Length: 328
Image (cartoon, rainbow, N blue to C red; front, side):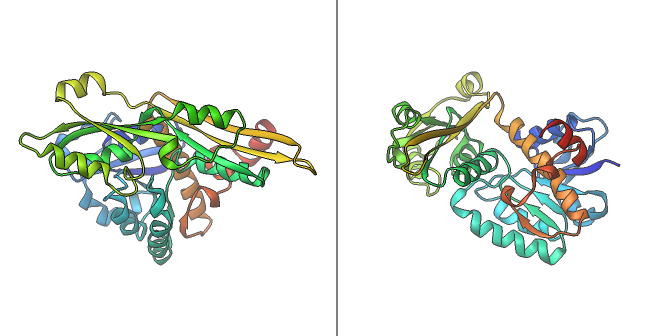
């Protein structure tokens, strides 16, 4: 029997989740839900209906896991607790500073409804988080470094698009090369947020919009841009389509540490991602955790979970015996 998946929100991430479901034989996409007019939303999976989001009020018996593909700025803080009361849910909430608050909200709703809510799935937070944890446990005396990019951040781009007067936007996160080189060489530099990355925004403004106001709102936005050196470029729709239609990304998590009775041996652990499509990779991570949500729910678990709380075997469609025989 297939795991029945619903998708709420059909932007870049929603399409990435749809693509990932097609690569997993134990899963079935049963519906795409949207706040737009469903007649204007065309999905690629045959025979899958597009429905208004309001239909979710009475489809609990038709969906095993609901994947929430909204933005972290304003959608997920409302949607995930709301739907966690009635569905097993997975989201990709990526505002790191607000994860504890989001966890508490989702945990209360999911426990009340007897459901599983897995939050902050993707690659950061998500796969990077796991590798930070593993490296910290293995090298307790050491230092963590995370570098993102160069690539398009969907969450930051979404946050810019929500500013009044913005028609479209792409935000690129760019590592500072000197900082990355210093870490990889084992120098253990003390780096501020501003010293590790810069941010570059390409914005299509609506006609008559106040460009100076838009730029100021971007550069001072807390949790997104305020702690970085940010450059804002205003461009045409044609330039956006020509030069910024792709969604590549990547980055690395590095931990440097020491072992030995006299700390005489140095080590560097690095986990690196190079992604052609950020939303498709993020969608693939989410779908693996949707399988975990389904299994944990079947075992009677409830409440909010993060990638830290979930055993790796829950992610796989393969049996425990098969995993032990071939992947250990």
